[in-house]
Length: 222
Image 1 (spheres, rainbow, N blue to C red):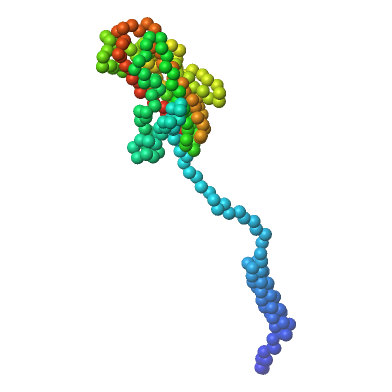
Image 2 (cartoon, rainbow, N blue to C red):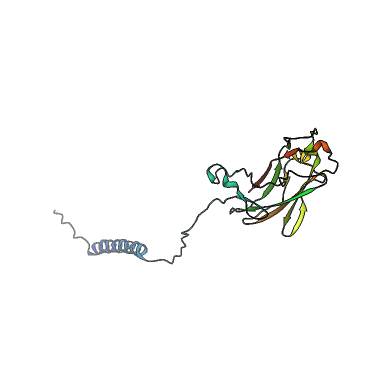
């Protein structure tokens, strides 16, 4: 008895062919979809900020006499720049500099302080230093600083107010600490100050020929 192999079913071959074609089609579709997704455009919007900067401002103090003929700047110190921004001004005498005052006489001196920097100043003070007495041909008195009364006033926006304590003398001014002045002082703003110095009417011959000196320190703080 002999065995004759059966022939492959045409139906099974067609089934395998259809499955292969289906898989090939699915793969092709997936590849096409990926290709289309990577190449198709989308709606977009953007803004580029091309100028983004920051810079430090400056605080520079200017002092002038009433006539505007003498000017001192805080940058007049070492290096003439804002690195130190501290200067000594010996050309504007707030107490008048007279050597001929008599009892009861008052000398008035006006100065202006201006913020010539670019930043607004939040604090403004005036700190009086120690009053010292001197003189070549002098009387015997040792308390001239207590016989020189001083009234300091400031004018801002047309309004004038006193900034020194009532009945101040050069001696008491030196011990009272820094005076708080009007602030803020915006860039470009000017404040006017007036100093009225009076030799007491009770000063007798023992005060003749005496002189007093007192440093004053203006300070801006931003």
